[in-house]
Image 1 (cartoon, rainbow, N blue to C red):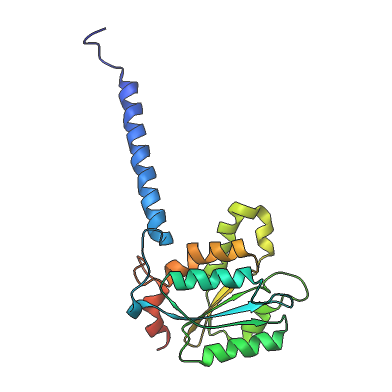
Image 2: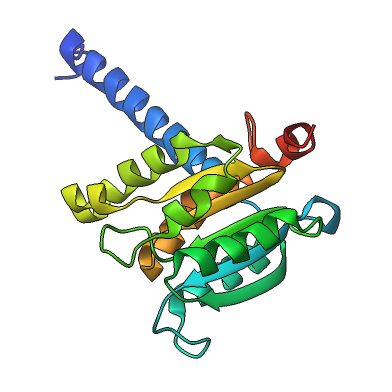
Length: 210
């Protein structure tokens, strides 16, 4: 009927709906900002120098999909890929490779893929351990929390981790291409982007090195 006022409950529902839509839009904007989805590649002066190491007894450059994913995502983000290698699942070989990259002044970040599980041949965390200056436990915690969305409780089988080794950031990622892409796009690359707010690893690197 003309002139009839809508019940107060209808107005309340409308206000709740509007607030909900605004909150959803805000969360989408925050997600894009945190993931770097709305950003282009970094300027050359803001790029970091990265080494990629694939840990595997069987993979080659021809079939290393996880290593290729790292190379692609890192370079597309504007960083410089300074070195890449495939190292067999041997603790001494892995440690020697990591030690060389950590000691190299032309390397800011080392990203590995493989060897972070629980089998006898998964020894990447053990290889890194003596080189760690400061562990970054939040990386592994966040990685497994995000991974839970995809693989449920199986995420507890991953020992993905990160650490500061002298003045070099080292990230140990699983061997799965999908896990590599998730870790890079949702955690690592946003933190290597000096535009990331409220803070990021890129801007902290000079202070990490003393």
